[in-house]
Length: 141
Image 1 (tube, helix red, strand yellow):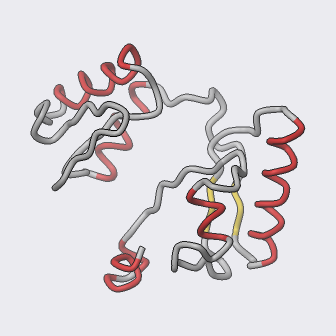
Image 2 (cartoon, helix red, strand yellow):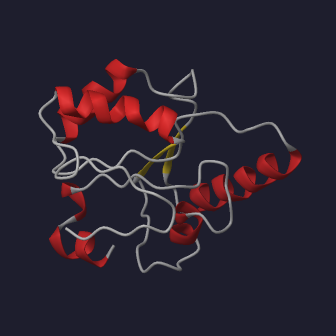
């Protein structure tokens, strides 16, 4: 986060955990001032999916959105309707961001392997620029 501030906020897109308003997720920690990075008026926060309809999630998300609104952050909700991006959505995102490395996450190997295969089709190399990680595994670039 410090590097983003140093390099210039306009050069970065932050993809963070926390769309359900989980108190320890990155987005909540940013909003609560725990990460040394602040959201300012007219910054954008995009919630790509709906809240999982449980009382705890609904309450957590409401608290998070209230804090964002207090900071006059622009909130965009429910952008992605299916809950998971399609293969072509992933292809478009990779083309737009042109990342040096891809680390599929947030699913088991049966799901992440599909993104690995797409990345390989797009010129990424398994073990060099696309990485399958296991719990508690670290990687250095």
